[in-house]
Amino acid sequence: MRYEVDLGNYPEKSRAKKFYFEWDDPDRLTIIFGHHLIFIGSCSCILCATNTTIYTTDLYGDALKLEFEFAPYFTDTANTLPAEMHNARAWLLNVHFCLGFFCL
Image 1 (tube, helix red, strand yellow):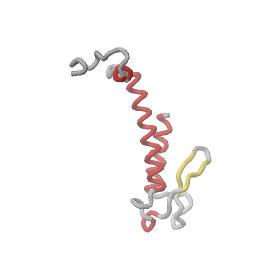
Image 2 (cartoon, one colour):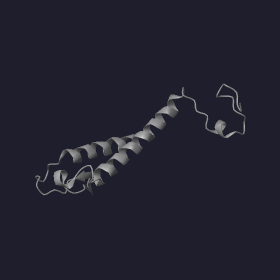
Image 3 (spheres, helix red, strand yellow):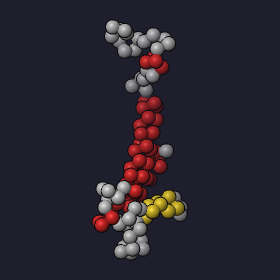
Image 4 (cartoon, helix red, strand yellow):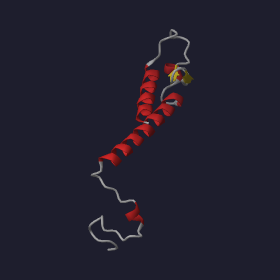
């Protein structure tokens, strides 16, 4: 065996010693969790806004449009809805975007 059974006893210059992680440190865990939420929120926004394979254009219309007013938000490109109404996909994306942004 190359190393001891205890995973915390790596040689000083080893690569594994560089990436040793303490699971008891709540400050580091909070930062890592926040970064993951930012990444997941932004990826879900991009995928849901531009993915016309899952959200077909027959049912949901064209890809959503990103607009900027007070804050960035997604709006529908469909002309069948009234001016201030959005479908469920736009609401879903706006919630994901806000949660990801507030974790930033």
